Image (cartoon, rainbow, N blue to C red; front, side):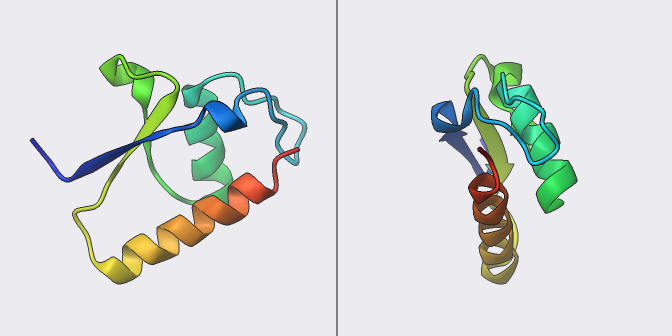
Length: 79
């Protein structure tokens, strides 16, 4: 086991990034997070858990808070 969280992202499927790319999968979403928010995550389909993404919480509370804020801002930019 590890220090991981799987988050459902069904609510972002079919939304559109500021650059015009449609989020069609958890793979698309984690690529968007890396580009837009500089947050690394793993698509849930790698674990048979699509549409989810996986993040590690084996870090400081301060870094986790910053990552969550970045993810929140990135999601708010989706149409």
